[in-house]
Length: 143
Image (cartoon, rainbow, N blue to C red; front, side, top):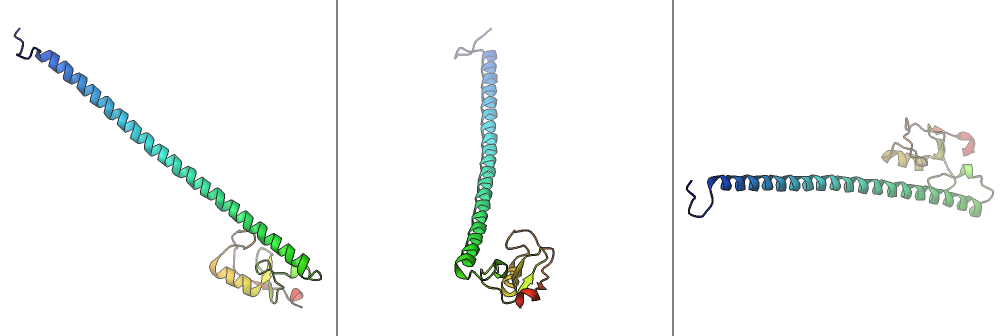
């Protein structure tokens, strides 16, 4: 057989090209795997970040509730010991002038809870959704 001038036969050139093709395919597969892994790890990082933010939001809410409770106790304990805590609005931490009750059974000053319910459909104390924004006057406390 006659060899080309550069010393390689057609078969060796084809085998070399096949090898190069397999090498390129392997490189492409490896690159795709890395990119897929990058997408998965980015998705995983985003999920972890979302969990982290939710955890901090829950902690912040718990701290707010604790501070509100402590403030309420301090007001009742230090301010006016003869005023029962049931007469103090949990929102304003002040003596209720027009006490009303929400459907969950909690008593608030009408002005404070009305303002709250304009922007929320939840209880300011528990965060639970209220079935209705109906308020029931508590005449016994008003006296």
